[in-house]
Image 1: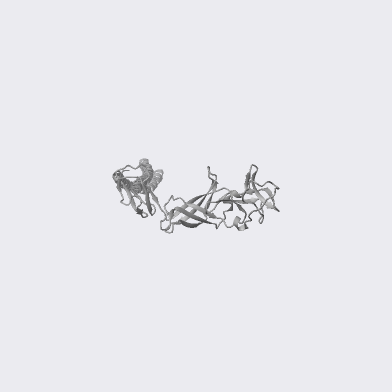
Image 2 (image 1 turned 60 degrees about the horizontal axis):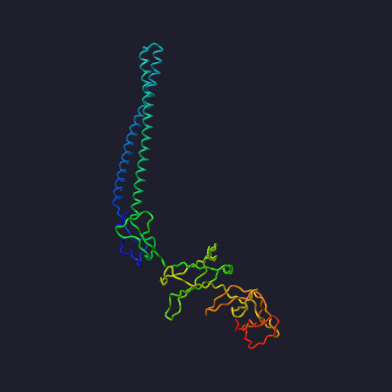
Length: 349
């Protein structure tokens, strides 16, 4: 319909309450249809009353015919007996028989008329139901003339102006409730296997800074993990719920997330602390003054808070072994090694 009125609060950034009127459409055509539908209901109800009156008259005629038929039958039987004994002429008997036949005919006609009147009443009632249904349909359309906010929130977009024509399905506005935000995170394959119930997720919003210059952080509980991997990245989506009662954060904000899986001990190497040969990654293990180019298997890289990259050693090294972390291209397998500096284990993390 035609947009007849638009609420002043229907503007971007305005707060609206649940059930608040946002828009009204021109209801002139529908008001006319409602008046016609109401008149049709009244006519149908009048038809029901008329049919009921005809039914009552038919039922009264049927009752009178039902009372007259036994009397005519008994009179015909009595005249038959008198004519047989010769007390009355046969013409009297015949007239009595004729009267009985006519009484039965009137009863049958009255019964048929009563049945037809009952059917007419049912038909009139059906007409009332149909008229009421048509009226209800118009009333339903009239209820849609006023567009209300389905929930409390903020207007994010407005798609209509006064005087515009709205077709069915046309958007009116985008309404956002920021009291609780859904945060969707991409979880790499493999990491999702270690996510357990009770794990915590630390969210950091780089664009929102506190007074001390640090980024705004929030910690939320673990949400739902999608059973399907994304087509392009093959990562899985983890969805968490972030309370946002003070509306500090907008919908659609960028967030960095750290899923805290718990502590895990192991040997970690930076890319500069192992050799990358055509056969794969090798660590330079120093034993009794000689170098051993030992193959190692590394896990997925992890980026530290300072931006440095670390790889967990999944196989090939044991805690307490000594490795070279500098000048790694010089040693040969089994060759002598002169250790210039022996770093403590804590320096290697």
